[in-house]
Image (cartoon, rainbow over all chains, first blue to last red):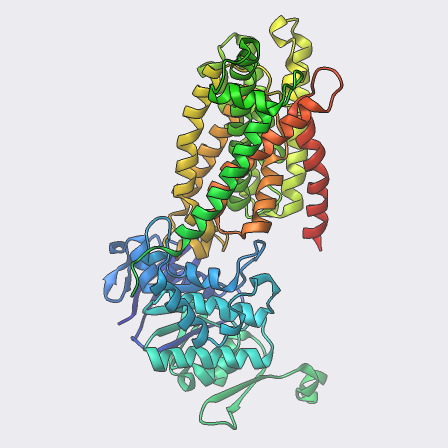
Length: 268
Length: 336
């Protein structure tokens, strides 16, 4: 088991952000957490990443309680790709990716030949090796996102966590990023856990989905089990059309604009 | 595979050696120049005891200019490093002890210490330290509300803190007839002239451990630039690192303030120039700031001594005249 969470609660002050969450992520799975705004998706991801500390801690990473890890040991097991990284300082792409090695190095993070090679491989894997010497702030949002994925790969983790990585990307970059994560899962056996707003991407790529609402688990299962018309309408509170994607046997979700709704209903 | 030499060390030693050379040149010029400019050759002779040299010149060089140049080196190094650390911790390239008001806080503390009648060390240094920590806490409390971490808000709060500190300082100065405050206005502008070698020794003993400590955390500063959350998931213990760096930096800044008053903008100019040349890696920038910052303030002090027809001006005048325009330029650039 890559991740095991049992009866997890998390409070912001008195406000319960996560209530009694229990689930497991199998090793080598593509696991996607979905849910409306404010449902606690990102909070859950940050608890798993070790950024937020749950008051009732029952979290196991790779079958070991998270308390048994030092910070560096945890960094060797889990890499985290946050939503937005502000780049006020002109680091080069190589410098950023090399920082992924610091959990393996001493206090000063003195890289050796070997670390440079790992960084180069990570850049090739994510398809941004041609940008190696560019400054990060000269790159587009999609390229920056891939650089940070390369940094995460350079960290050689067992698990990669991503917080809405496709949120600000155009369609082509969205699919490229999701394909990349799938390749990472298939070729390197890395467990991928992602928070996403996009239920359709989640349906096409996720092995298992976790649907959160108001800090509680609504559904957990494969895309077909989770993305049902009844569940989604209840959780998102709007009219939806759920049918089968023309690409395969995964569900497709279409929000229905008001103008397409039954006119009789409006006249009532 | 080749022997395992870390890649960084080679680059670091090349950069350090070249900056050390610049610093040594600056120090030599600093010792040579002054009201009794006496020719570089003569100074050389005095420095290396080559020939029987003029005892009068010996005194000027060893009792006055040499301690002064050493003081400028130490203060420049400490202030540059202070700026670098604040820029990393607040993730704001415009942060600097003087601009944030930390220096102003230690100046208040130092003046109170002088009025109570403490000696320069440890008394005045400690009250200066207390003043800088008070301002630091104020800034941290304000910035914990997230909004103020934005560039403009942080700068605005710095302007207000500085205005307040200046008012308190003038209040204290006006309320007392104390002769010890005779030179206070000069001192406030950053004056390097009143120093003996003993003071320089004490200051070096305070600052050098801080330099080493900050270098030890230089890679953590790199990781912190990617955001607190990212740094945490890469093995950095954020709270410990932040507290140690802030306390060490405030300690350095208050020590320099209690010896030579407010020298502004050094922590802005030097890290910015070095970052342009060597890139943003703090493992390079920390030693570079120590050496380059030292050289920068020595040069500024030379200007402060040479430019006036009679007497001299405080070095802080020069650093502010260079630094403030650069600050405005940077502010405009980062707004884009």
